[in-house]
Every structure is written in structure tokens, then in C-alpha cells.
Length: 82
Image (cartoon, rainbow, N blue to C red; front, side, top):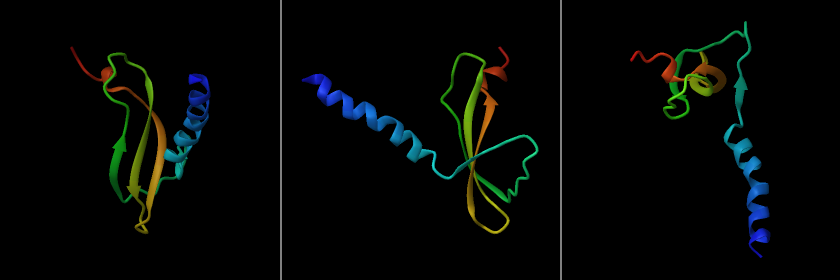
């Protein structure tokens, strides 16, 4: 009985993740960026390990349109000096 309730929830998880990433263009090396103003940078919460993580920058381009750019970066733990 519990399995019947769990299966629909598990099937909806990828759809939810996809919906939250709609409109995000993935950065590639050499890509021309038209950034007039950075509005927000989303990155994972503090992680004790130094590793590569995914981040999303929300910005205004020169025509005033809101854009989202996905990119990879080093976690904050990599730059902290102890």
C-alpha cells in the first residue's frame, strides 16, 4: 500500500527539477555574454569538501531582459583559508 503512494511522488521529482531549471542556458567556453547587471547568484549551501558545484546566475542583459546562466564553479570550501 505504501509503495503505491510512493511511486507517483518519485515519478514527479524529475519533472519538478526540470521545471525549476527552465530558461537556464548552460555556459560553454568562449560563449559571448551580454551582462549589464547581475541580479542573483544561486549556489549550493556551504559544503565542507572542496569540489565542483553547479551555480545559476540571474542577470539583466543590455536590452533589459532577465536571463539565467548555468555554470560550474568551485565550492566556497576551496577558497577558504584555514
